[in-house]
Structures are given as C-alpha cells and as structure tokens.
Length: 200
Image (cartoon, rainbow, N blue to C red; front, side, top):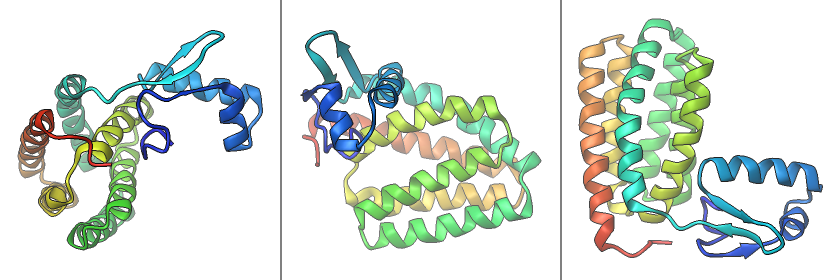
C-alpha cells in the first residue's frame, strides 16, 4: 500500500483503519508497523496515529551507495552457488522484464523486477544477505515506483539482462562491470528526480 502509494506520503492513519482495510487483527498490524518503522516507511505517534513518511531523494542516494557493494556480493555468491535451475529462473525473469519494459507496462515492470531481485538474492544462498537486501530493495522499490519514468524502463531492463547473462555464464568480471553500469545509471536517475515531481 505504501510502495504503490495507495497510502500517500503525509497520510495519517490509525492501527484500527489499517486492520479494517487489511482484514487483520491488532497484533499482526502492530508487527507490520514495527517492520515498516524500521525501514523508514512510517512514523508511529502514540494517540495520534501512523504517519506515512515522505520519499527522500537524498536518502535514496545514500541507499545506492550501500547497495552497490552488496549487489556485487550477491552476484559473486550466485556465480559460485547458483544451480542450473536458478540460472534458468533468472533468465525467465529477464525475458518477462524486457517484455514489460518494452510495453511500458508499469505494474508488470515493477512486479517482475521485484521477482528478479528476489530470485537473485535467493540464488545467493546466504540468509544474512537475504534479510539485509529485502529491506534495501523495499526502500528502492518505493522510490522507483514514485519517480522512475516509463521511458527509462527498457534501458534499465537491458542493463539487468547483461548482468544476468554474465551471472548465468558464471563470469564475474562482466557481471561486476554491469553492476557498476547499473548503479551509475540509477544514480543519474535519482539525481534527475530532484527536478521532477512524483510520477504517481
């Protein structure tokens, strides 16, 4: 709801309203809010409610600095440990991502990109890395859902395709070079967002 902006930045909601909307009891709602607070999506104000935080461009630049070496670690782990089935799943994700990007299908593009990231991290077979990357990817998804223009989808998908091709070939040098290209591209897009209104 927050990533897709059904709950927009600045919205104030109560635990009860969230429970009704999601058909959940008080305990699971509080547990979910605690996780969302940890990754900076909400602020909890006792007796006032839950405030959805703003999407912060500067914080996203900081997040990209953290993610770059971690994405390189993911790639190295997948090259070392990923199975043939893992590699096939990654290539299926890439084919679907390219199709969604070519069609400028916003919802499909973000859904498939999430599946690709989860498949990559899963194929690293490192639970600590999985937990760390889940929070970082959630924060990135929120930013890109707000600011990534459909015109950039195909370029971004093609860079991902190059990275996955190198990983599937178990060739670390072009995989890491591709990650460098990707993060330079993401950094440029983030900086452009300083002059752009939210797209959704």
